[in-house]
Length: 444
Image 1 (cartoon, one colour):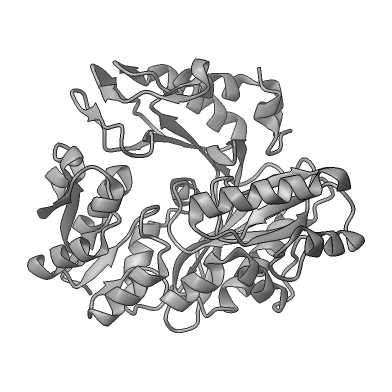
Image 2 (cartoon, helix red, strand yellow):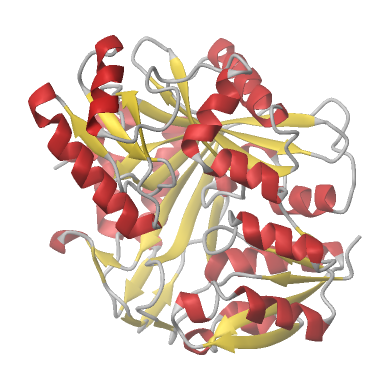
C-alpha cells in the first residue's frame, strides 16, 4: 500500500479522496492555487503545497509543479480525481517515468479511449454495439457526404478530442451539411487544438445510461450496474440516478457485459465508466469511455455499498478485486449537482461569499462538498459547489427524500440551482421516469 498520496485536484473530489485515504491509514498531500488557500481540502490533508496562481494552466494543470510537490513531500502515488489532468495520457506516462504511481489507467489506455474515433474502432472489434457512422475520421465535407450515402438524416458531427458538447453539430439536411461541418471543425480546433471530426447517426430522444466498471492488474473486470444521466443541459449532467428507470434486469446484464468487453479490449485498470445511448426500442450504443472516477460516482456507492475511491487505490496498489465481483444494487439513489449558478439568467455563474450555509442531513442523505459558511466561491473554476445524494428503498421514496433535502438546503449569498432541482423533482414526467436527454428543452 502507498504511504502517501498526492491529490492533484481541488474542491469536493479532493476532500472526498482525503477522507477515504484517512480511513485507509494513508497520508495525503493537497496541492492548491492561491485562490484555494482557504479550501477544506487544504485544511484536512496531512500536508499542503501551493502550486501557483488561480488560473488552472498555472496550477492544477501545471505538471512540473505537481510533480515537484510530490517529490518534496515524498508522495509515492498521485490521485488525479476528475477533470484537470485525470484523463491526460502524458501526465500518466510522466508519473510512471518518475517512479510515482498514477492512480488510474496507463497512458496507452487513456489514449485509446480518449480519442473518440479510435475508441469506436476499438470497441467495434469487440462486438460492442456502436452508433452507425464513419469508420474513422472525416477530413473534409466531401468525405462526410460519402458516409451519408449509408446513413439517413439526422446525423451528428462530433469532435474526436471533444467533450462537454463542444465541436458537436446536428445536421438535418444535405444542404446544411457543409456549413455545419466547417463550424464544428472550427469550434473543435478552438476548444481542443484538434479539428478532427467523425460522423454518426443522430439518435432521437435517447437516454444517457452509463455502466460503472472497475478493473485490476490481474485481468479481473467487474461492473457495478448503471447510472441514468439523461437530465442534462447543453450536454452537462445535472441529475443522476441508479438504477435507471428504463433499464430492466435483462438489459442491465447485456449492457454490463458490453461494458466489460469494452474495458477488456484495452486490459483496463482502475475505475472507469462506459457510456451508452439507449433508444426507445431498448437498443444501446457505445458513446465513449471515461477513464477516471465520475462526478456522479456516489449514486453507485449508495446502492452497492462500495467505496469506489478505495477500490481505485487498492487496484493501483496491485490488490485483486473481490472474487465473484460486487454486490447487486439495492434500493435507489439520486444525485443533484448544486451549482453556484442563476437558473433565471441562463445559469450564469454566481461566485462570491457564502453568507449562510445549512446543509441537509438525516437518514439516507449525503452531501459531498468543500463549501462552508464564510467560504468565498472563486470565479476561476467549475461552478459546482456540492453534490446532494439520497438513498431509499424505491425510486419514489428517493425522489420524496430528495425534495425534503432540497427544502432543507439553505445557501445564501450566491444564487444556486436548488430551486431548479426542486422543479425537476416535482415534474410529473420525471417522477414517472418518462424522460430523455432533451427533457430540459421543454421543461417549464
